[in-house]
Image (cartoon, rainbow, N blue to C red; front, side, top):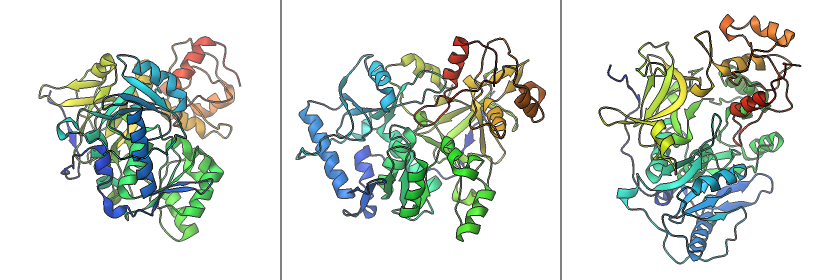
Length: 469
């Protein structure tokens, strides 16, 4: 059966191909030298565009003085830099994982931590990458979140990053004024923050108000003081924002307009580290669309594949694993040929697809709805149960602050009567919680806020006790 490919409804872009630094600095009209580029949300200290470039060149010169050459790998904790070397960008909690991953055929030369000295002058030109290597030379190595398995180092090329910034520009920013202000609190080791906020912000000339970590009081104060044009949020951070803990929809927009006399547009997008990251989004012409992450972006194609048969999904209502191809799909996993081979598929026409592991449906107009992860899917008597759906139901219970439903192979346990009865009224028979409910002090999450169901599953195996409240 031929592949059923869903193409982007947007025109293909004539993508600019250049090394990352040259590309980011090419949009000079958005970069007045004295304009604040980064602002500390707590102290108010700021770096102008000119100061940021000076510090970037200074750090690159310092790395050269240490003997770092193009092709070497440098581990960076919480600081984005460029010098011709490849960078492993890792959260502090992942540094041991990063060191271990890089040790496989290692070229790891140095690990750089926060608060680097920036006194080295730079008199040498920065390294540029030949155009023929833009698609194959990594700009940096970013670690996947590891929600369903061990975190892997993802090799992201110069072309991957610059292509996705241009796709993002067409999808989200075609009607946004240049030189906006944004509040940035996502971990700068996360691909969303790296590309959409830092690199994309530098390209657009955005002033970025930076929080060292998410703090609701500081966050709200920053919104009040700096009046940002855009807010970048991830689902886990909506919980602290009242109405935003539910879907961002018409009700939120109406309440905002009633309170402030103006309209705020709330929309969703979807992507992965392996797609640099954006795949889909809500275009400004589709602000009214709800319960969807939008359509696939320019220069991209997706397909849905049945995980049991390996055939393409043909029914609009049928779920399948999302496969993606496009210029923003990454090189592969560093030092892990087995994982790369498992995650990519080359079809009979030579097209290279990334198997995302996410389950979705696509409607007749190309709008995508993400359901869950394949590895987290629960099956009961041959029927599929989506954990995120159950978690959403549990969060509606007045006693729940957060919830997770990891797949477990353990013998079913007794269920807390009250919550069990409450949930039974709201789900189909095959979706009832037969594994029990356990109350814990905290649900383990990654630095970017994703629930680590694999950790919960391991804890259930270690403590096979009866459910309790």
